[in-house]
Length: 503
Image 1 (spheres, rainbow, N blue to C red):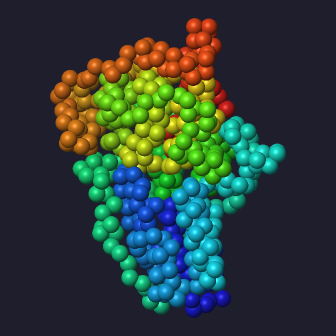
Image 2: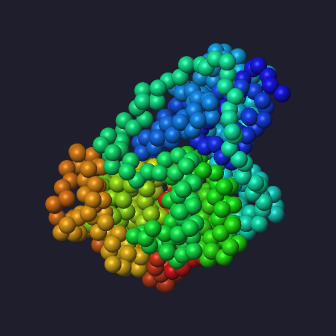
Image 3: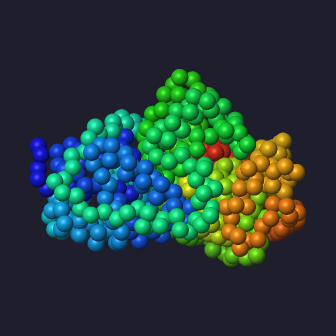
């Protein structure tokens, strides 16, 4: 039954029309609807690449909304203040939104909900960007899961619910409130010249996300389990970018992957495990929010990581002299993302061979990744460093040279991104020099740098640091070194193959 007072729909990281619980519930009220996106301080604090990519998503979503006879109103400022002004301007009955699960968003959203309800207004939050909301998955004792494999077993046969169809139309209000212009927000200002390079590798919006999923299921899911570790192959879904901005729902991906699994696609179950790994990261961020800023395992406060340092700066610039590490970082500057096998290698190299604190890497990924996901990024970095949940034996260290021999045996990935390794470098290798700051003074014709650290010496130094931390005799065989292998993820800094561990 229609009512006169409109509802404000507060969109955040849910920029799609299909399988959108909040949007479906709002349409069902029969009210006129005012879609709104707010650039609040929490959103504006996002890293350079993710903030720029968010702007592309907002622009695409505004066009999708317009196709339903509506429009997306843009406002800037603290969310509570902006919503109060919009309610005063429009006479809105209240606000609906999709839940977020990071600490800053939970604090903001809780304050907004309390203030609206105190005024007798509608304040409804709906399921957000995970398959299973964090408090709905419990251990037999009623607590939260700290290890992935039991978490996977707890949800793998759980009903995810049917995906919801997109609305056919959105009832507009009798009068629209004023809107900012997206270009006036300058969301890409900190990308500088890198935006033009990275833009060529983005698949923006709901239509592109669905096409990406369909292409993966048609071409790559069968070989996913074996091929996903080889960064030169087109073997992964690359949906992390779209999931980050809610351009596609995890539930829609789950159902599509499950259909492929039932139809006999060999790699489909592993693909589903990667989607659940993302849920597990949010499960942990919700229950242990300190994972984003401090060692998840408190006893790691004793570990002698270095703060930011000149070696870390060489790492940031993709100039460590270790080709697999440098290729991965350069891939990030050119494409906005990084293959997950490579994420694990660069994270291990920074935290172990260079003994640099994982937060240095975490913060840099947050600045540079267009698929940045706060939960997956935090859990991935801490998993590799050894300080996090579900970690492999912390004293195992990736050897980037042997990893390259195994997963890039013909050097295709390294040559693709390192101009100095080829007499005739390709466009992606050269694009790195167009993307990075001019102040770095890099030249594709220069000699490739010598290694920052000898791999054997760096490994020995890390093992010695572990021994001092725990009083373990490395010569006695307890710390045998080796390498941890891992899989390809739908977002984050890296993790193991769910349920598998190799040395």
